[in-house]
Amino acid sequence: MKRVLSTIKHQKEIKLIKESGLFDEHYYVTHYPEVKQSGLTPIEHYVKIGSAAGMKPNAYFDDAFYRDSNPDLKGSSANPLVHFIKYGAREGRDPSRSFKTRFYLERHPDVARTGVNPLWHFLNYGLSEQREIDNARDTALGPENQALYRELQDIEPLLPPFENLRYVPLLRAPTESLAGRAYFKLREALSKPFSHLLVLRWLIHGGASTLAMYHARLIAERLSPDSVVVLLVDDPGNSAAHLLPHGVRMVALDDLQPGLTGEDRVQVLARLIIEAQPQVVHNIESDIGWRAIERYHRQFSGTTALIGSIFMFCYNEAGIKVGNAVQYLNSCLDHLDILFTDNHDFKREACKSYALEKHNQDKMVVVYTPILSRFYPPDPDGASSKRILWSSRLHPDKRPDLLLAIARCMPDFTFEVYGGAAMSGPELEAIEKQANIRLHGPYRSSEDLPRAGIAAYLHTARHEGGAITLKEALAAGLPVIGPPIGLISEIVNPDTGWLVTRVDDPAAYAAAIRDCLSDPDERVRRVCNGQELLKKEHSWESFERAVGNLPAYRLPPRRS
Image 1 (cartoon, rainbow, N blue to C red):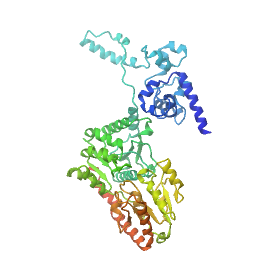
Image 2: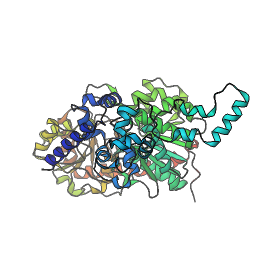
Image 3: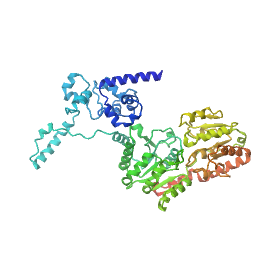
Image 4: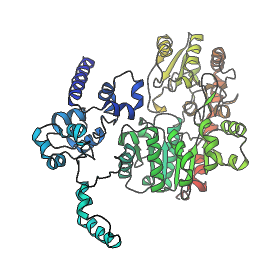
């Protein structure tokens, strides 16, 4: 029923907008070429998608401006153009910064007498007649400029009389861009000065976001919460925002200004860094952040230390390297003060792949993401359980296909799967239909995951960085089973877990699980050894020393 009502509402809005003559199809498809790939007509796209994303139906109507400048519309689902057609024009509301409704009617009384929509009149007649839409000319011809003009006439007597300027065509600056509006809103949101800017793609549950949280905590402890800003520039996802330290500011560009293009985002970020001049900009796996550094590093580097974080080479299904490491590491490393990573495997591969010179090798600093979750003793009775824990996003990068194959190899075991689905179609349906896989959906932290009655933790992935979920499982007292990729090969060995070297073979994982449960004492021994390793090398104190003592990170000594 809700879908039917929504369809009827959209059809009524489309009809009203068509009849108003205020939708400029040529303008819309020219400025938003992605509309052609949407499968919708331009006006359908505007009503169903474009308006909410800040896309403009013509050059002089600005949906975002209309919403922002009319408090009664904030939080409303009403289409701004529909509201303007039905009520706003009659009430004298402005459709954009550049068109003043009341001014247009007062300056052109012939339009007021007709009773037509003033914006419609301007688009159809007033524009070609060069009718004025605001008081820019009156401002330009004010007393101050008149006095300046008299001085110029003393220098150049051939200048026309000042009064004649009233009839000269008025040249206007370009209309305000979405990027410009987003930047002013951003500076408003960040009115207090800050020293450290953490640039993120998003803030969702995962390795990069967890690491950002720890960097924010360190800066907040050494300086103050006001000193650090977390800026989400690629995507508004912030489901893990609750993990940030209290008082740390977080801003998502999409929340400030919908409809920004990738280029808009690069420009907003670059302008913020150039004008705010933070002591440190730390880009943590943001594509927009890397593009800004690649293009504007010379403008940034005078006063700002440029820091990056990349954790791994990613591979597509064909085994070809993709992702930020391939796209930006070689082109940006020369311009960075530090490049953090969280495993030696990635550093070795990067140095070899790009034949990095020693000074660039030295810029790559391996710092393990700390494990702050509580440590639990291993459950000796877990060896008799038939329940296996798996926790991550259901995404092709995490090899859910391999998880499914392992489950099929072990019909006598139950696989407890935690994490949101980032895939769909037949692959997800197959997992949902597998009798011995239980899907529990997203979780907020490792403390939400089961420990009692769990036999082991299974880790699958196509590529890996800091293996945070595996480390958290080990801290929870679970034996860990996984492939030798990323940090896993530094943590898991015959004394601390079960490493599966045949990374694509479900039978090898099944054999490792059964071997793990075949000797309860050995299972407990390896878990205890793994936990000691984490406490020694993956603690908060180790992280604080490693990052806090780097001169380029510009933090004061730890407070006693």
